[in-house]
Length: 304
Image (cartoon, rainbow, N blue to C red; front, side):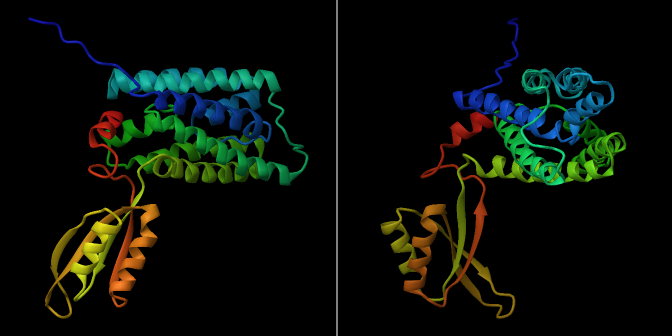
């Protein structure tokens, strides 16, 4: 009987390495030169490290490493070795980068923090950098540990949703940080976390993904002409579907066409030329795979 081996390859392409290393450096810069000098707590292990730094002077990166190590063991127990290794790689690199940058700068930052305006700037700009860094790390297939692991474990074994548990965990950390640093700093921390969460979503869904638009085209008499021009001018295909109107109870046809973002305007012009009275619905398509777009196998291999 042959022994089976477990494939633990964490990366499938050079871009994964690029995302990981650039992401941890950007997040570490946000932590050591914007968050901590402005006494902004943040959430997750970064927030825990900040609290211990403010209270006892412990190096923030070291506290993050210790915190994430215990969470790493929890991740392995509940989600397997590969998941745990992804969390360990991302969180360890981030911790080391925070310690190195913090030691070099003395956690002094780049602004004069005697002004509340500069603290606000640190919350906003630091949040943007943090969201960019964490988003890039997530795109590499790794993560930075922290409350994500706790939230996933609780969500897996309780009725509570992942987002709810994560919010509660981060809220506890931010409120604790507010007790240590003051209520004003807590509000700045909330601003920073909001900016970070928005940028994370943008990086994951909008950066280097195969964004496109799905267009539903309703035309009473001109679908054949529109279809022909879509194929000959845009070199795209589509699908003609059939439905029943709620008000008229009549069967009518409509067409679904998926085009890259840069072809949305030419498609709109084609529709308007052939049938100015057409009804069109345009929705974002986060990622499109298959003929004419990204190769399905390539995307599937990367996401696996």
